Image (cartoon, rainbow, N blue to C red; front, side, top):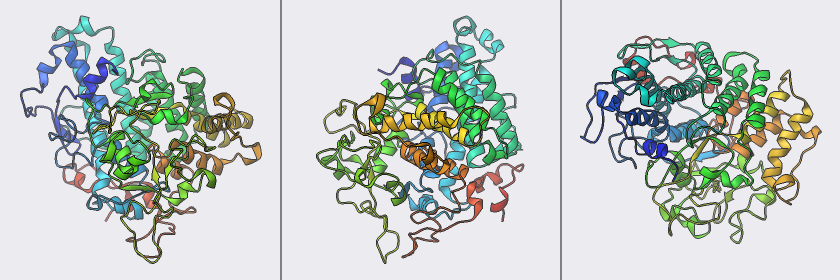
Length: 565
């Protein structure tokens, strides 16, 4: 059992409101008598906990019934496709050197593959609406948990000890959401709990959103619970340190500001003070019992019974594997894999050739040097193309990815034949990323830290990947100081962090997203034969456009310049 809080979050106990665009009507009535609305929600301490749980769950659940069963949180868009973490996978992975996604063409996934989207591309809007939905949930919680309202409702005494932490957590989730608006869309409407419900928000610039995220998160470093003092699934101060490290690391890209010293400071703090040590085995981070993994700082909790949706790790497992693969490697979902995303050659080639192949008698890759080379190759070609043909929507053109598995670390299924939905929690933040962020910040000129320290961080990650040094007696994966440079860091991030929703951001930060580095199908206008080698594209694709429909509901918005008609 993953805690009482988890069950509240996962079943989406409370329905606060439905959204139209990024604005909502908080007086919307529930669709059935089992849902709670308005004052009835806030009449008990459990109601407040349920609302906070909904703030968390909004980033991985899609609606009130689970399993895409209807009554989705955001009306008017596909419930399954639009789940936040699934939508983020499209925007952060499907347009990069890691994944060729070949289904859902009507949603615009092929536009991501070819890097030729525009403001009307459906798939661009899903993350946007989900982020603002979560922001509105957090605003509602903060608005209704003010001290005066708690006292008026007779719940102050029961909640006064924990409420400051609850409020800090809602503020953190909101700050995270704004950081992703800053990353993906640059600018956007700004809404907080001080604004009257129904107010049409004005747009803030990328600089203003960045400044807000930094200011808010710096304050939260003293307001959230101390490391490891919160229950599983809820954030503590380490999450704030991690978010600051990530935001500061991207500051030069986002707002032209050198903040590498601060990025190093907070990444190192995660490593040395966070109490979330690296997992002893890299593969354990991505399994059904990863709630026991020491490394995961902030998980989005999933469960085959209580947290069912087509987003999260359920999507990652099923999209990256198909049913026939279960004969060779237990996926934990049996024959239910969808098989609609395959690995690009550019990612495979970042691993030693000997580690790239899947062997039937070694389904976990125990005999590989680098245990992160988690590819399935039987009956698959390495190439995502067929010479002389246009892009093929064929799962076997390109290796499959077996990084995520709905099985336990003792290599057993939860039930024979697998479960319909995943129980693998999605690691939003984990310590391995902090090691690489700290090393990168040093190489980029952080005022503190040394090359020797950066090399140590990278080699610690590689020791764990190779099960050598403190992690086992495998062949060492150490590199030398002469091999350590930013290009190596970028490739190491691909090896360590692939399929973890950060690749587009990484490529942009390293100046390799639009120009100077090409991969399968990049820049192809429509997947024509002979265009698989990739080419440079317009720099406008470093940002996504604000969804076109937003301009019919908010007169204060201005489209990102390169997408203006």
